[in-house]
Length: 306
Ligand code: UFG
Image (cartoon, rainbow, N blue to C red; front, side, top):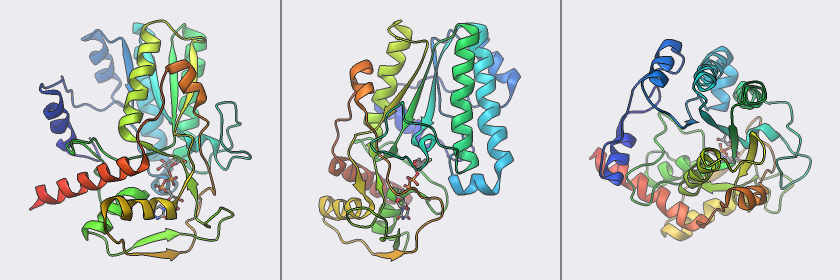
């Protein structure tokens, strides 16, 4: 909650029709985490709590290490004590600039290009080693580029300040909050010169977690620690995404070509076949549906602000 308000919690309650238990606490507070586990029967943890801005992590590495590693160590300690299954939110960032695309779970992890990426690699290792030593079960899901919002437009992305990521920048430009989208580089060695990514719909991504948690609690895992790529398998360029957004929502976006952004990889997309065969999960939503949902969410926020 250091970077959001209760908008999304209220949205979840509205979608569910009831109020799921919500405890506001800091996962870096060891005693609070122990107390939470002692007072609940928890079958599985999905650990999302982390800072996630690449640029900020370069400026404030210790803040990232303290928060992202400290909170996860507390979760692992508690999970060890209670025999709890652990699902960790990892990232395609662990692959860095891959030698070959698409990447499979066996593709090598490259040395991290930011403290943020480093925390994702380290947390994967914390989970792998804890599983090996303590007889626990764990899954790391490597997300590609999550975008979009719930189709109800009741929950979605709420970046504070100027967004770093492409889709919130696009929707904020379309609504008039930002003047112009900068496309960072059109001289990459790709078909249209802009970077290629694997944009995964946030609802599809959420469903992958349901499949992974079931696999752990139903005892279906092949190995006690497993890793899955969560992506579509479709590379989409920045330019293609901008054009698709304009087309599906019937508007023109103000954009310009800007210099490359430091640290961006040229192209990365997933081979998601392991998730399909083992988790029974596959991305199902089209980029157009996802971009329509992202736009509906931005309009919902604008209407609320009036
Ligand atoms: N981009 C623009 N203009 C913008 C923002 C982004 O052209 O205003 C471009 C970027 O250069 C990149 C693409 O859009 O080519 C996607 O950029 P994002 O910032 O949305 O996403 P990234 O691929 O840089 O980063 C995402 C996650 C990170 C994660 C990384 C791993 O946000 O948390 O994927 O690959 F580490």
